[in-house]
Image (cartoon, rainbow, N blue to C red; front, side):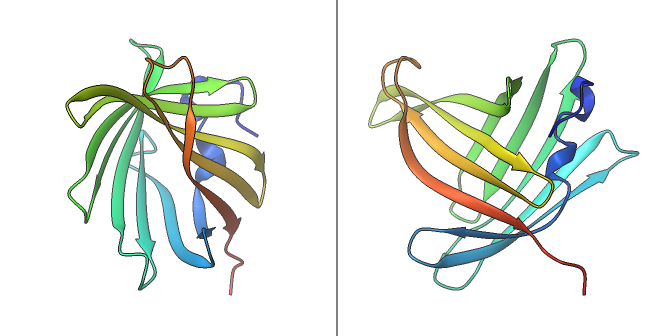
Length: 145
């Protein structure tokens, strides 16, 4: 579970992970602290058939009192998220536009344990009043070989 220090709230995510979703799709995700530990870098690689590779950089901003994450991927997506720990969940969200209309997107980390966690990608069409699940990932820590 995340630490009491906001600047270490994402430490649970560090490591090498096997990620699974949908009908048996899997990939890997390597999460590492870089730049003296001030930045967390994500390197996601969906296996063949998943068609997605992506990377993110996350940093805690003491001035804003929140985490900021920038994501870019092989499908041309780019998002800038903000958020942090909310109870026992870690949530990052952003505003976007779909079919000319404003939407909100968010990722929710939950069921956080030392060797596993769950991650939901959600969308809101009503300004965050309600959220619909777009897809769910399960993370299992890759064992050292």
